[in-house]
Length: 115
Length: 114
Image 1 (cartoon, each protein chain N blue to C red):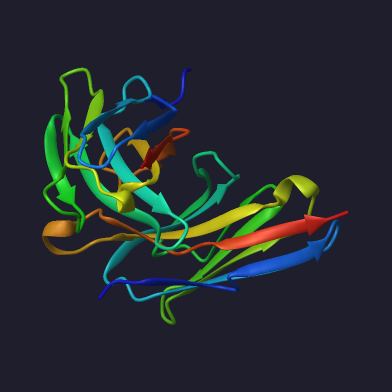
Image 2: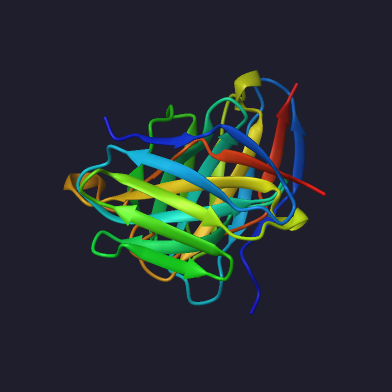
């Protein structure tokens, strides 16, 4: 079964600190992996999209890495800000069979940044 | 450029009723997909439409249905509402099929079934 698992479920850090969120997936084959940020009560916003051949992609203070061999991805946030408090969701796009392009979502990591 | 617009933003319905939610994609986008988000289950895929055709479908009962119009606007219908249907329903649009290109989400419709 295609699954996406994220860890930790929640994380509290102090403003200015760095943090790393993890994503393990079993979706195979896959075409791309995405990270989204979702503020409370709002729709998710795309942070990065990586194809299976990419190892890293940055978007400002957000850097995502991908290891397609071990089926792991991470999202690193540098110099956290209060506005980084949100849920971060890892999403994998399936690349096989009749469900080609179907997105599988992780449960998300809730990040809280304290002053 | 206007983003993805979902209406209404909030809705309260009674068990057994039916509801229709609307989604207007970003201009030029041909794919619209729908998702249900609950605290316990996270985001779950409902279905995707591309050029008025359903391309993919999630594991939801037949009470959940959708359609897409020639202008790419989409509607989702839930019949015979159950308490467990209470959730945030999100719509996303993309230029091409959702799995190929970046998806842009709307703000969602918060449905409460009482």
